[in-house]
Image 1 (cartoon, one colour):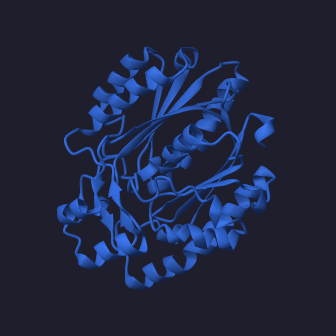
Image 2 (cartoon, one colour):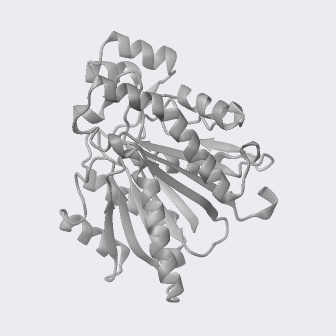
Length: 325
């Protein structure tokens, strides 16, 4: 599968950390941890705009940036939700109708992908890969559109004690079974779960939390190693690690445990945007490919995601330009 293009929607003016501290009243202890230990600075928040309006803003921007020939081939639209579908397509037919009319295709299939928390977008990649592969076998040259991004509308999705806070930024990622000029190839995907923590969003206790914390790094390292093995890559061959925007020191530990340099961690947005639910990997990939120095190789790329209910996901991305691989 190939990523043709990524469009991102980020707040024009970021909300500074002191404003967030006052807004959420999270206390001086969290402010010290976020600023001194995690080095966080700000978050992307859309204070006035509603979620459906932001999705349509994203799609309007996507249409401007997308190759018209690829735009016309969209047959599947999946929205990856961290929050158990606050606005799923099946319960928001008006939004689905607006998207269908905007894309100009009557025969669109809509999907809402959830239950993997903030790893749902990488789970959605696997789902869309299966749909696009099946369409390709029927000689249907379709594309899939993956939407990600949500609102920090409730206290449980505004900040996480000691680990970080959330942000609002959106991505529209266009996928296909065949390459296009400048496309990025998804060479491997691996998702695994710690099923014992599937109810963590609903109920938990200190013993369970301690066990989860103990299992986190070993499970993520296993996920990374499996994805790299499927891609036929060694850790030392990686040129970029794309993190998600929570607990930044975690990625130093992952680098050390997996056997690649901390220097390849892409930190451009790690401290500025907040944890933007399912969008982090795509925000960073868009930024990496936009701002890269052509003299420096950025591929192969490893992108990670984890969900609070025990889902761990990793994907390996490669350039379609053989000179960069």
